[in-house]
Length: 206
Image (cartoon, rainbow, N blue to C red):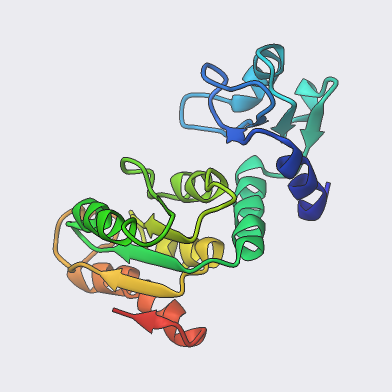
């Protein structure tokens, strides 16, 4: 199934879910993999609880109302990127070693005085959380604030291709959580992927 077809189903749904325990009626369930679980095993449970469709990537679990794809995570990210493009609202991205969540909350509180702002809840700022945040945006949103975290080089670049920010802020660059980056220079390279994206699309760095 192409992303455009999945997007048509998404527009008719009540949203998306990656957790069969809390999936809502009419939602599309994405069977993601983890270190200790295989989401495909819970597709039937999600459908029994009222999910309209279950996106799976293992043919062994195909039943009625499942959609078989090559990679569930890739399809979730592609769907979010497509929805973001269709929304046509400004997106502000925030990253940094620390201070991301506080900065996000402050900006959301200020901007909400003039705009209908949808923003990252909690710390859903990774390769799964960012797509979910975008896909949860109400249709009448006037601005999105997306927090972006990273544990390795290349992650911010991927998140930018999904969220397509028009504005970006790097709160700071430090040595916390340096394990996945190898060095301070690696942290710098990872975080500045946001500014590199903004430069390429002629967007605004704050």
